[in-house]
Image 1 (cartoon, rainbow, N blue to C red):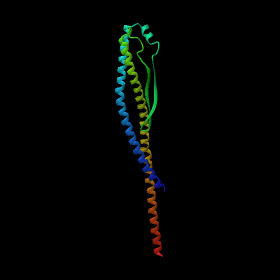
Image 2 (cartoon, helix red, strand yellow; image 1 turned 135 degrees about the horizontal axis):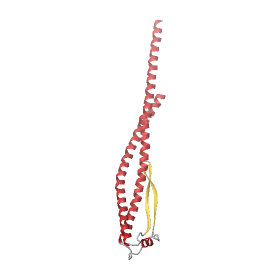
Image 3 (cartoon, rainbow, N blue to C red; image 1 turned 30 degrees about the vertical axis):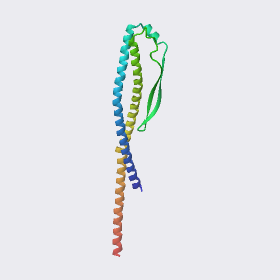
Image 4 (tube, one colour; image 1 turned 45 degrees about the vertical axis):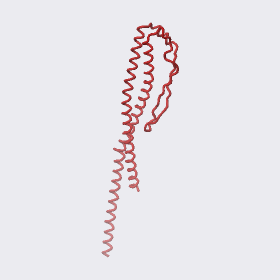
Length: 197
């Protein structure tokens, strides 16, 4: 009975190992796909932020610091981030969606530099992309953690549990074979004794 139970458990462990290995392979594929898009998005955000800073520095060179501070004293736009979840291969990853209310260009254009307008426009684009970048980086982090957990489980099954089960099955099979041979030998001796009388 123990032998049958261990054989069933070995079959189940092999099936689980195959499923976990397939899950690990798919997670790694998704991870690399996400990583490739992340590199491009990060580069885009860095370029937009650099453009915004460059234009803001140019705007500051044409305007007084007090004038710029006065333009931004009253906030004209409110922003927020709504967070929801989606599942990728049993991993709950966050989905960020940016919510903006108002207009980022809320000042008069008569006394301002056009570079300031371009700087704010570039900053607005960068903010939306930055939120998307944060979402993808968090998803990447959670997927990497799941890949590591799955890898540990796959290795535990492959190198510890399955070999131990196979070893135990082999040991029990050998013991049963040995017992069977000893029973056959005993029966043959009994038969010889019975024939002799």
